Image (cartoon, rainbow, N blue to C red; front, side, top):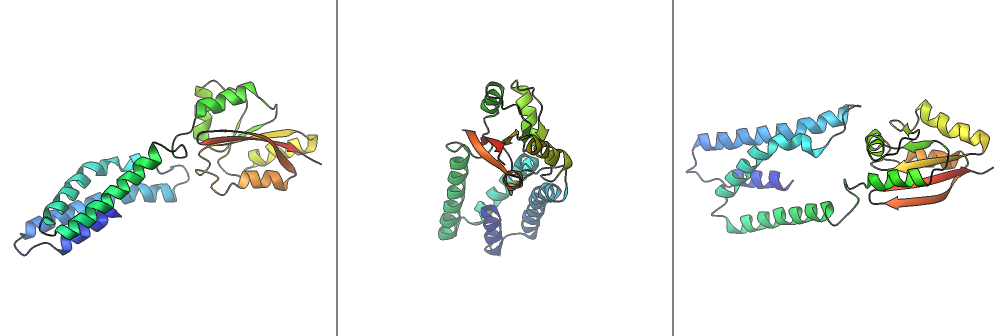
Length: 217
């Protein structure tokens, strides 16, 4: 949003002395950067197998840097506008750094701790993991027990896993990490509660939560 604002303002205030070729080059860069960013976003939105990741837009970084530099060059004589836009860029940068480093809710899942917890405190029932990506991480860090990867909260394998436990009065373990990929509405936990399960214990690590559900008649 900030970059788009910067470019639009730069185009709007360009001087009459600028050559058309300069404007055409800036327009080309704008279209190129927009395409390199929008296409991966659209692919992630319409595809059931591709989950958008910001690194898919990495090809836009170099032309984006050139574009921002050209925009600032056009704004040299408009100090107030430049100061406002620089302040916006600084605020967005600080906000991004604040999310990435001090926090633990964004791409900072401690899968090692989850794997260790599952190995040492196994409930004996099925383990539902709300992201196939996390399953790979659990295997990497040494947990090799049976798991059900949740790609669809209503999938037969998921429903059968907790339905069988309901019939035997058993237990289900739910691992929620990167659940926004396939279960952003927390549907699995809601279905477990609706089926008669209740959370009896839980373990939280950065970016992940393990909940143990017992069936209660």
